[in-house]
Amino acid sequence: MPDKDALWISNHAELRLTATPVLYHCEPIWSWKTSSLPDHAIWGVLDGSGTLTHNGASYGLNPGICFLFSPNDQIEAEQKPLDPLSLFVARFEILNTEGEPIPAQELTVPTGPIQTSNPTTLKAIANLALAWDAENDIEKRIQDHALRMLLLLIADASSASYDERIAQASSLIDSDLARKWTLEEISSKSGLSPSQFSRLFTKHFGEPPIQNLIHRRMKEAKRLVLETSLSIGEICAAVGYENQSFFERQFLKHVGFDAEALRRNRAI
Image (cartoon, rainbow, N blue to C red):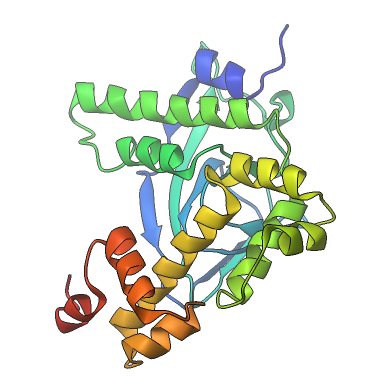
C-alpha cells in the first residue's frame, strides 16, 4: 500500500470542499489564530510577507510558499504591516472511494511549508480554483482539477525541503531595501557560498537574487508613490537608487506607469 501523501491524494482521493475557496487580501492589522483546525486546508501565499507558527514551529511567509494543513493543527499567523499578505485558502475533506473521510493519521502530508518553484504558477492555479459556480458541473470539475493541481505542486515541491536560510535572507533583504546588497554579502549572512545561495534562492523564488531585489524595490516604490506624500526623489533614495532618472526608467519598466502619472491618478 503506497503512502497516502499529497501525490496519492491528488490521484486517488475524493476532495469535498467544506467552504468556498477564497483569496484574502489582508488588512495591515490582520492576524489569525486557531487552536484546532476543523478540516484539511491548503494555504498559498500569493503576495506579501509575514510569519506563521504551525504546531509550535515558526516559518517565514513569502510569495510561493504553500501549506497543506491537517485537522486539529494549531496555527498562528501574522503579516508585516507594510507588506500585506494575499492568501489563497481552500478547506476540504479527503474521502476514500466509498465517500468516507480518511483519518488524518492515515495520511502522510508535509509538516512544514512547501516553497513552490515559481510563485506565478501557484497564483495561476489558485485563481482557477476561485469563484466558480457551484451549480455548474463543468466549473465544479475545473475547480476540482485546480485543487488536484495544487496538491501535485505540493507533492513536487516537497522533495525539496523548506530552507530557513533562504527565508531569513529574504526577510533580511526586506528589512533594508535601500542597502547596496551584494550577492556575496547576502550569501555570507546565510552561511552559504554565493553560488549555493544563488541556486537555492532562484529555486525558491523563481528568479535570481538581484532580479528579485529589483522587483521588491519597485513594489515598495509603487506603494510609496500611492500611499505617501514623499517626493519621487525621496522615494528613489528610500529604495536604494542614487540616480533618479535611472530609477524612473526602472519604475516605468516594472510597474508599467510613470511614477508621477501614477501619483496623479492614484486609482490606477
